[in-house]
Length: 370
Ligand SMILES: [Zn+2]
Image (cartoon, rainbow, N blue to C red; front, side):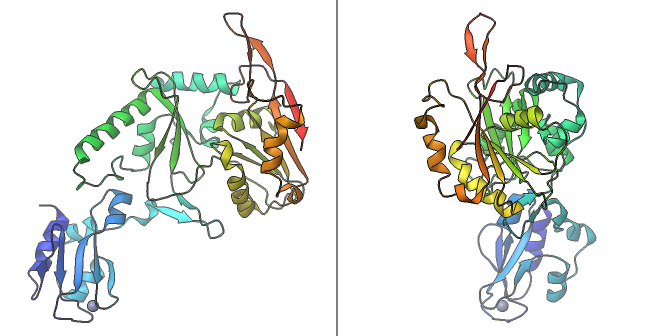
C-alpha cells in the first residue's frame, strides 16, 4: 500500500467517515462539523500532474475548508502520523514555477545541464556547422540548448510521465510511447528550451525511426499553456535608448542572426524566435509587455522563399505591411531582412540559402524598410 492509501485508510477510521470511490473518501469536516461528512479527501490531480507525486488534497463542500493534506491538517483532526508519511506528502515548491506579474507568463525553474557527454559529440558538431563556428559550453547555456534530453530530466528531477493520468485506460501504451520518444530524443535529437522553459524544440539529427520528423516539440508540463516563444538567455537593458527587437520564425534563424550581426554583447537587443509566421503580432505584444520597448527598431529575419513573389516588388512585402499595419506608428523602423545568397550544392546544383538558420551556407543580406 502506498503512503497516501495508508493516510486515507487512517482517515476512514474517523467517526462518520465514508468511502467515496477510488482514492477518495469523505470525512466529517473539522471546521463546520457538518454531520453529513461533506469534506472530501483525495488525490490532488493538478499537483499530481505537475510533480508526478501522489499528494492528497481536501475540500469541504459545505464550508470553505480546503487545502493540501499536511501536518496542519493532521493536527486539526487530532491524528498522529509518522515522519515518513509526512515526508511523502511534502510539496516541493522550489521545483515548480514562477509567474511574471506583468505578462502573466508561467515559467518553469529549469537548469540547463552544463556538461557534454562524449557520445553527444556529433550533436555539438551539428550545432557548430549551423552556428558557423565551434559551439562551446557557454553557448549551450546562453542558447538554452538541450544536448541530452535524459540529462535535462535527471538534473532537474523531472518526471517524463507526469502529464499522464495513471487512471487513463490507455496509460500503459502512452507511457511506453513516451519512453520510446524519450530514448530517441536522447540518442538522436538536439533541442532548445522555450522562454518559459516548458517546451523543447527538438531537431532530428540521425533518428532512423523518426526520419520523417525533422522537428518535434516536447512539452514538459501540459498544464502550462503559454504560446511558443524562444529567447536566448541574453540580458536586456530595459533602459536602452535605442532598443532593437529582432525576430525570426525559427530558433536557428534568430541564433544565426545574432551570431552574424551582433557578435559584441549589446544589451539593447532582444532576440526572439516565434515558431510560425502567424505568431508575429502575438509575440510582439508579449515582448512589449516584457520590455516596454516602444519606439524600438524591429528587425524581421524573414524566410526568403524562392517560390514566393518577388520580394523587391510591392506585392512581395504586402504580407508584412498588412501584418504590421496597426503597429507601424509604434516603432521607429520595421525592417524585413532576407538572405538572398545562392550557392552550388555538392551536386553542383544552384540553391538558395533562404534563411539565417545554417551559417555554413553563404549569406547575402537584402534589407527592406516597410
Ligand atoms: Zn466544512
